[in-house]
Length: 197
Image (cartoon, rainbow, N blue to C red; front, top):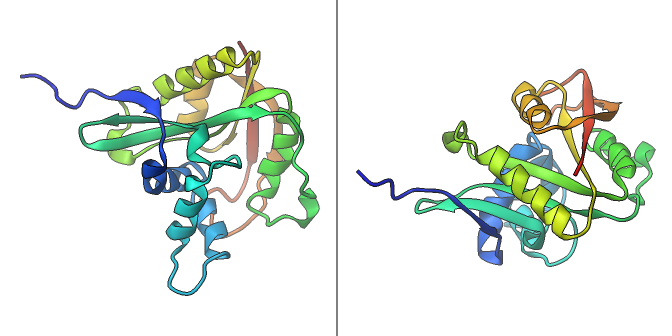
């Protein structure tokens, strides 16, 4: 029997925005939905805000920075990555608790190709898609002349940490998790991992 669902990678399009918003919320452990809920207008859901952001052509969370894994069933996962050329302007002390460690560590990613998010829908995990998408992000970085990769991850997300270490990433920094009910990890650190290409 022929498998008609062989996955492929391609550049994301605006038509992928809804799936990208769902996937970045998975990667962000629910923090994106919590943030989007603060920007909703009448009749709008947090996911609607995320979709509108994914449809933009500017900013880190834009379809233009994403690659998707897909097959005949649709989008299976995505990697969102781009070069960081300058430190974020936000004052970490004034940021919402869930995102403060990420912004703090992003400042240490300047000059690298930054993997903002990697996620695969739960029903499609365990098939090597995460590794394939990370390798594709590394090719994008090399094509852009970048020599360093960076990614952030909750240290308690053991599966993701294992994947990144297996792919050659090592710890460069860490920042303590700030307690907030929208995230599953209440202790420990967010890790900044890096790899030289």
